[in-house]
Image 1 (tube, rainbow, N blue to C red):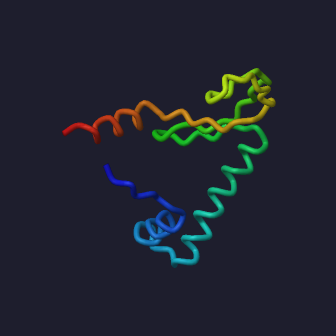
Image 2: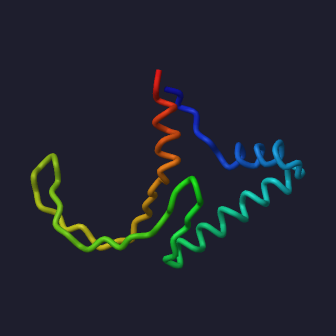
Length: 100
């Protein structure tokens, strides 16, 4: 399995090739979309992209954890975490890509 990572530059290059905007306009478009998504998540809203998945922020309560090396109990502070739930179509597409 390849270790290639899709970057912002890759996305803007894809927009440049597919849509025909200039490279600068493509990069600005990608940045604007990611900025809107980030702002919505910071505000506690869900970001749902049809046929892809849903990003949401979840509040996790304080709890007691355990250091795996020492077994010592350690308090874990409450925090907000970002979650992603893929759509059924995305799950099927990824699973189909794993078949030999």
